[in-house]
Image (cartoon, rainbow, N blue to C red; front, side, top):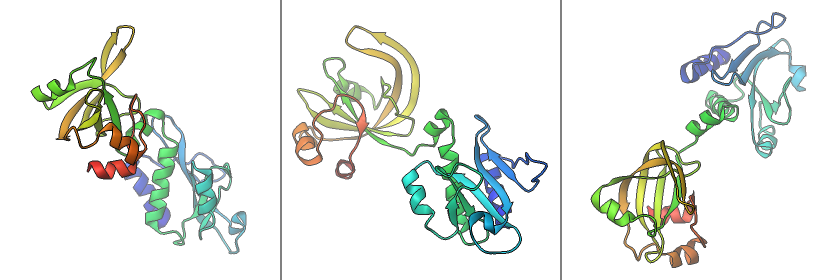
Length: 246
């Protein structure tokens, strides 16, 4: 029944119906993305010797993609995990559907394979929420006055930033400190601006969540405690700084 549970899981979560593409092997079923048509799983019935194990009759297996070769090397050492059969052995893995691998783990592998084979747009949507450190130059925009007038403003769209992400606004000299924690509420708002020094192609909307004292997260502290020596563009937030900001 595990094979049926997998197909029902894929149908419910991704709207993917199993496709039986081969007349010679009617038990083989492919699960694929709706937008780019790529396979993210193949369900098969094969003989145990195909995987180098003992047994009689047919066994149900699932092929999934693992986009990290080092992770794949570790996973195939676990019971019920094998290098991909009938697929690229470099980035596909075959797992048993006989109860050796718990269903929860099978579902997680299916989710990872779905993400690994998704289109660029879908990968962007699937990416977990992220924290960013974003610079604000007072020479170009008075963000202090802007947040004094409203708790939601438009800002230059940062590459890779998506709705739901958190941005910590670092205000440059003479402030030189993180002053605001914001949530991104909208992205990819069309906008064109260029003056030779600054070019803006799109905007994002950010909502103020928290204010920090100007002497709390200064550039000196960012440098000394968190290894941040420059804030010239959007960048990820180190774990230690993330904890301190919270």
